[in-house]
Image (cartoon, rainbow, N blue to C red):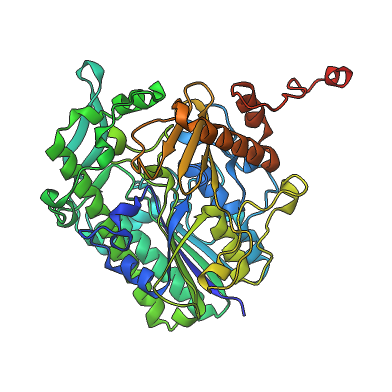
Length: 500
């Protein structure tokens, strides 16, 4: 029998801001409860730590280089701004098989096309952050006599020359009941009730824009977490020694050194407050799911498109640095009939969510078999055997991730296993981290002589994986700048290669 799906998603959500992932000071009872009633995936990762490509991967089940939507429209420097016409999506597959399909909240997949273009019910709320000027939100406020948003006490860094930097936080002069997050939860509850009355199976996505910076929240949550309880991330000791210079430039761009330790603790506390506010809104939606008697027929997902630095590595936001802070994501899944309170340590990724959604509907989890080279496995696999504790053959023991730039083109590929992480930077030094000896990725050991066998092995494995996936342009570049003993065949792709 096809299952309903409630898909809850946040933006730039660190795993260590959630109680069930080990933060004793987090105020996330509803997410913690979801973990207690389902499966917590401890090693979940995004295929790329940038909003639009990650969300397009969720929609299509494809790796970013394959669907080719590689950058946010706001900072696009020449990549596609819409998915290629005819790209299969899980939403259209569900709609074609009798599902009601809705999406409330952040879309951020295409520049012009909204969720309705891909079979979703719900408003198109474009942009990277809360679109507080959206006509739907303004009408909702007016109907309830609620005040429009205003902020005081803005927190900004300082750019070179004393110029004001980005807005990072501020006190939102609205009651919680007027926030954009409350509005989104209200819209989702209305659509949930409508779908329940209809009786057909449904997929409902609720995508919050936060806790993406800037952290603009009411006093109740701005002061919820005591900064004295906040520990600075261990990677706050970052020096950028032996690492790509672009990381130090990003630190400058985000004014990381504008704040002392206490100010950073407050910023991190406010970030946790933002997560707590979203958790409360998620609780409202989950309560209505229970009220409607849908718990036993509905799978519930919670995840994020990627993480956020929030001071880790003296950085903010995300960018050209493939640290776990932004590539690891929270991932909770409750499936009717599956055991509760489970933790799974295997590597999973956002495209596994796509395959799982299709599997829950009784559809083929492989959405795009024709988009890959012959013999190349799908970019995602259904998680149902994992949550049902069924035998699974050949589950991945490593992950490949990619990055194509934000603000400017910048190519990176990553291979991560349980012990090591390799990052190949097309224009700079490569990175290798021993995640057992150095879990916070502070020391780049790529040039270390005693790790030369590890380096070569991971370079070879990454090259093989990229080639098999069809990401061969980067694979050819990587081969040319490494010491792998693999011939570089016909690198110009010209007919003259046949004459050699």
